[in-house]
Amino acid sequence: MNGKTVMACIDAAHASLKAHADEIASLDQAIGDGDHIINLLRGMDALAALRAQIEAEAFAPALKLAATKVLSTVGGSSGPLFFSMLTGMARASSDDGGAAGFARAFAAGVEAVGQRGKTGAGSKTMMDVLIPVAERFSALADAGASKQDALAELPRVAEESMLATRDMLATKGRASFLGERSRGHIDPGARSSQLMIAAVCARLAQDEA
Ligand code: ADP
Ligand code: MG
Image 1 (tube, rainbow, N blue to C red):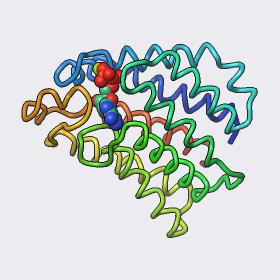
Image 2: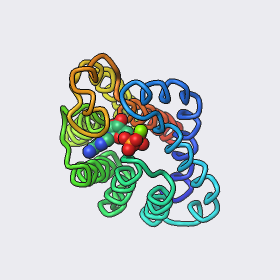
Image 3: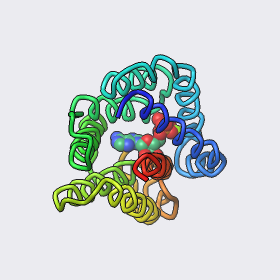
């Protein structure tokens, strides 16, 4: 894992967000202010412009560089949260390039998002995708699963978890202003996180194949 891998993952996430831009915009129009996809694509465009610098770095500094750019470009509630995800992962990254090392880094990223957003599971946010994925990832790693097995399994966990936000009551972020009317809509941040996880897993699985 190095800066080139980080950039390849960013590219994969970027392409998936672009392909689902209208859908994510509609989700945030329904229970937020509609800017979530604009915020994310602004960040992704800025990261694409940093390609040469990100690719030249090792894994952890590449994540930190991306995080700093995300913080200064994404905005909204989600900018600082994605910054925390990336810096949390960078801090916990290790020389273990297998499933266990990755699972630990991902879990640390998710924990950092939780601290920043003061949210756990059940508030109808991106955490309702990130937490179950981190937990399954750690369980798979503890059980000795290969990276390839984890990369196949985690997108399924992310999708189920994203769909489960539809019936939740929002108690954090803008959607919480709607109270009961927040039910019946998938959380935009849960959808964007799930799409990025699926795209990154698919991209990393190519390297394992
Ligand atoms: P804003 O809500 O400020 O317009 P965005 O539209 O970019 O910001 O992001 C909205 C998404 O951010 C929500 O769909 C939700 O998933 C996520 N979110 C909001 N508040 C929190 C929080 N405290 N913890 C985790 N995620 C949150
Ligand atoms: Mg918004």
